[in-house]
Structure formats: C-alpha cells, structure tokens
Length: 181
Image (cartoon, rainbow, N blue to C red; front, side, top):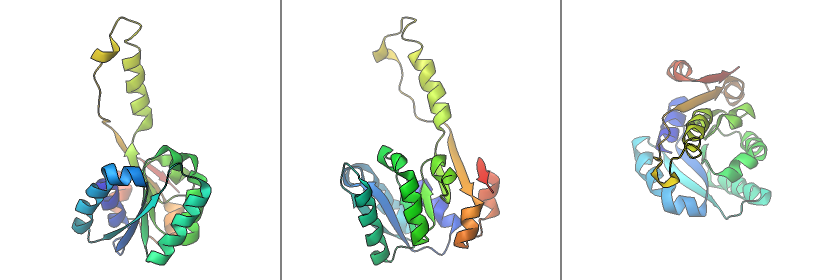
C-alpha cells in the first residue's frame, strides 16, 4: 500500500489529503499502520474511508459523500475482492468526485481509473497452477512452498489523466507496464 501512495504522489505532487477506501477489518488489521508510516514520508495526511462488510453499493456512495466533506484530494483503493466486483461504480464515483485515484488492479484502469499498481495476476496464476500441478504427481499439499508475488504491474490511463489535468511524469510513463491512451 505504501508503494501505491508513493506512486500516486509522484503522479500528482500537489495532493495533500488522501482518502483510503478499505473495509474496517483490513484497515485495522493491516493497512492502517502501514499507511500511517508512509504518509509523513510523502507529505500527505490520510483520511480513511472505512467500509463495513459486506460492502454494498450504498456503502460506497456513503463513503464518497464523506470523502467530499473531508476535503480529500486523492484516493487509494485497496485490493479487496468487493472492490473488484464494484469497480465500475467505484470508478464512476471517483470520476464524479474528480479525484486522482490509485487502484490495485489494471481492471480499474481499463474501466477508466487513473492508475493501478499491484501484483501481476497472470504471473500469480501461472505460478499457482504450477504448484497445484505437483499434487497429482505425488507432492503433499502441506509441503508445497508458499510464495510471495514476484512481479508487479504499473498501469496508467492517459485519457483519465488529461481529464483530471494530471501531467503524468515521464518517469512513470517509462516504468509503466501498460499505458492506455
């Protein structure tokens, strides 16, 4: 999550108050402490918009209403499955709020989001399939190693950047794995 915040700040240096869209459980268990550590290094304050599970469309609408009241000028969306399911709604709400936003998956960028940084799902799928394939060949599931994702992808949407008035830095353009014109 910290890397996502750093990349968003690099893309939009003027941001100062970043909303973070996450379920209350994940924020408290994992993301809150990490974001609170990274925020001072990027000169931003964090305005968490915590959602109660299960996350429904009205919960998203409420969260975005609160973001506007908080004076949030950017958003980081975590990688929960519910967000992927509701990605079209989230991107629409972000667009309506005219916020630069960082997502976890390229699917959001394809739906019109500004940028995404996260695991390369195809690489993870291939690695997982290779490990699972070992089971019918006699490997015991408990002895198959757990791995950390090795590849991460940066995806940018230049059309959305233009709409938001974001001049995407060349350093991000050069390092991006996918650029949507």
